[in-house]
Image (cartoon, rainbow, N blue to C red):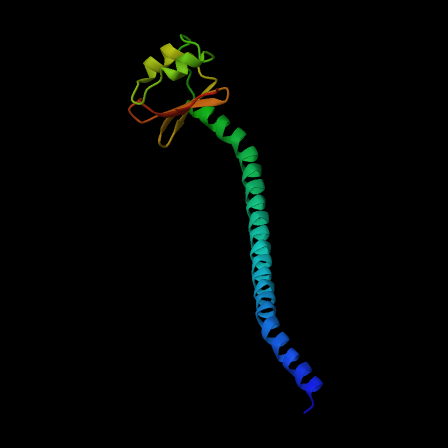
Length: 146
């Protein structure tokens, strides 16, 4: 073999040696990209599925809420708290404590917009807030409107 051909051959082998990690890396990047695209597609499908479920639940609530309220009214399950306190005062909500009795809450916050008897206890609803009571009439948790 003459010298130029040997040199070209050696350069070709050297280039292949140099380029093989780059080619392997490019193939690895392509594989990882394909895997990530697959995961993105699966997540998008899952999000669409969850959005559909939320829409279905919102439709059910819109349909069932008036029926439930009417049935509760007919059964006498709705009641009103005594209008004593003022629920619009943030400090009154800050004074709430777990375990307080309904009477104490009524003195602090006054009349709820809606009160419901639920399977787990009572709930008093205020604009953008609520208080949940256990079966003994003690505060379990709340979400203030502020």
